[in-house]
Image (tube, rainbow, N blue to C red; front, side, top):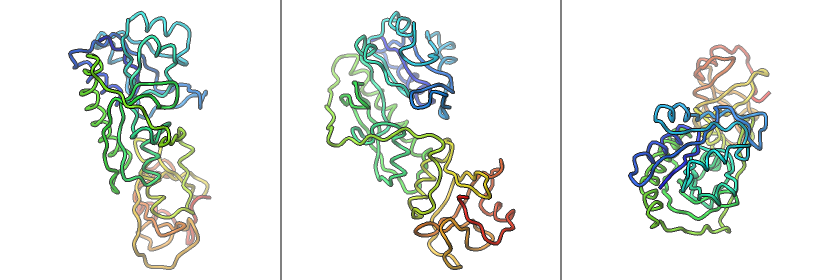
Length: 315
């Protein structure tokens, strides 16, 4: 089976390498984009923080590869790709809709980091952590005309631990996704894969996220903000607030069960001078790791720098 790979992320590159090892699959070409690329919801361009240089890998592996400049309907792109004779497209780490005329030429299969039909759309793992979900997963499915709504080939699930960050959860999801490819791509090649229609009544579609969506609302309770921070920590751009008008990125936090001192106003830094503790709309949150004025610091280190007797975040 001739396979054209479409992707531009570290996970996508891992999927390409796994597909190369499957004896029933021949990688006949690849499509990728630069690290910063335009997309429908951000024509000026977005930066892929999970980027991998698929083009360089393909050059080293003697795989034909084209770097898309604009979108999948750009002049000459489909003609070039179709000349490779793909029988399927394998899509992973990709942020563009695959046009119907591509999928008419050859079916497209992709991985989505949720248990479809739930958490269709953008940033499913980030949204799942933000929303306090206890379980998520990854789905291999055939693309259709809607948002992540094609028939399911296979799924794997995992629990979201209270200690998880987006990085630790993503690592587990990656492993499950690679297992899906190893198990089901040979079945697709042999025509023995079974397809399960998605239940549209259970679909929830979430929007894409951008760095500006990471601003913390201190009126939320400490557990909600803890989830918000760990959902967007490294390698993502991070949750943020403002201190004296300067952006303060927060990478790690923990909820505080008890603390000396009275409750302050929402967003106020309270407690002792050795711990960076913030009053939320419900409970206290300690900030453990952050970046401020270009310096990566612990909460303790920042508290030592500050001379203010009363600090309120978000301003």
